[in-house]
Amino acid sequence: MQNKNNKQNTGYTIIETMIAVSLFVVVVLIGVNALLNANLIHNKSGNMRSVMDNLSFIMEDMSRNLRTGYSFHCFTSGEAIPSSTSAVVSTPKSCASGWAIAFESAAGDNTTTDGDPIDYDDQWVYYINDGKIFKSTLGPYTAASFVQLTPDEVTINPVSQFSVLGAEIPLGNKQQPFVGIRLVGTITFKNIVTPFSLQTSVSQRLVDVGS
Image (cartoon, rainbow, N blue to C red):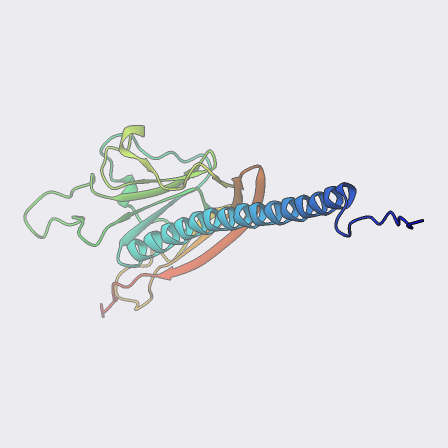
């Protein structure tokens, strides 16, 4: 008699193949999920960096314009920005905590020495209200004359403030007015809230050379 040995062909069975494919799919899914999460984090980081760069630019813009300005008027609680032509915004006033600041820009006209009347409509104004920072370079100071500087993702807290020291000091004592800016708030993006705090100080560049 001839012995018949039933020998199975060597190779992968269907079950082994299914297990291998399942493991491969799981690994691929984990890798794709990690890649998507990394891309999402990168996009969020980029958007957050863009907002922070915007805030830094706003702070630098205010600092540069205040540094070259003069006749600072700090508005305190209960004091309103006039909505019509007024000398109030060009009257120097110091304060420790103000919600707005007005000043004569470097190119402004605050004298009558040039033969023209004093122009009280060219003062610049920054103010903080309803969680936003606004700016006007043209009076009279109505809502239409102000533009919003901060993006909608940024909320400025009420503790943010302007401060002015030495605004009323007369010409001749060789002391420069000193302006402080403090911005505290949050950035909300994709339901993620990130707090921030920015602070800077500016000394008037206009040299007091009076005797």
